[in-house]
Image (cartoon, rainbow, N blue to C red; front, side, top):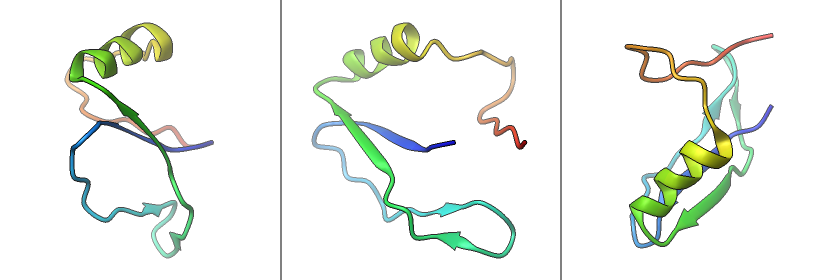
Length: 64
């Protein structure tokens, strides 16, 4: 399992970390992919990643 930050060039990101359970924080460096425009980012998400859309869900994580 992996996490990736998707952003648009020139946008400032706050400091972030990954918490994989209730106790430990990961010091993992997240992969980051920056796009030239918001349209490029949107196109990547819609056509390359092709996420499963769950109505009324903002963010969904599945645990195995």
